[in-house]
Image (cartoon, rainbow, N blue to C red; front, side, top):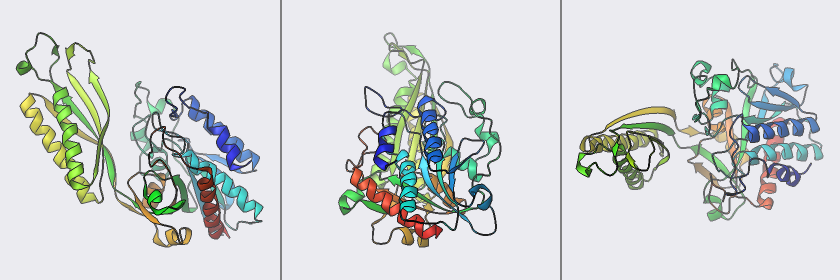
Length: 395
């Protein structure tokens, strides 16, 4: 099955008929359909499927791989990405890496490659955090960077607990893995500027998510004078503007992309606003300075508005520097790019599994949006680069 045919098979799954974007949230119908596709793709290649208690999938090639990958004869190599999407997201973020991994296995077999180490194609679950609010949750649980006791209590927007969706437990899916290579669509414009199809990552900016709870007083939108209100929406609005200003002044990133308003009535002053801040910066000190400035301005505004602000850090990931030797091995002659986006590769690198990332050019420069795209010729160049890299690692 060619790359093009696999991509054609996946393209309709979870796609909105109105926006053209994708809704592939973990353990819901579209994502479950993609997981079934993953199993069929593995079966068609006689790859051995392994699934951990959290839903992470690996299809193994070589040596009756399940037993061989933990033996003393050699360490395993992993490639792949994720299948879930953000709400109304693009087609390529995640699935491109999984489809390219299967296509790279096909290329290697056509070349007559006989691996001397087990090679796995991975699909990590809940990478985007779009359902249960924790980015890279599957890979964090797999490496032990997140505990199941905490994760099982996470709830989605409908109040469904993660512990009621999956059984959970302890993962051994990464035992014996010492190298991970992830291919991903570029989520920016650097490869456009370099006029090249493929690049390699140097590292990932530190980033995190903070929940802002702003409490005020519900009141009548018509009869309550402006000066008599304790309106949490005003506090939030000024906080969002402050985040934008602080990020622009420092060259960092700050985004309020999700908000929940209570009671959410057109003719009522709200009583409570909950908003989630996504903040990213070029270093950990820069991230701390940025988020402290935003919180300070929120508190100052709340004092003027007669509201109360509570800030809760929900998750944070430190700076990741990918393995330099591995980066140079797989990325010889291509541009080296930093990335501001989080990835499973960053979680594995932090856990001691040497990791690297290949990027494929996105001619729109847009990601987490229906406008995200990639040209087939560039995708095939990415498959070749990934096959070359994996061949060098398993032979």
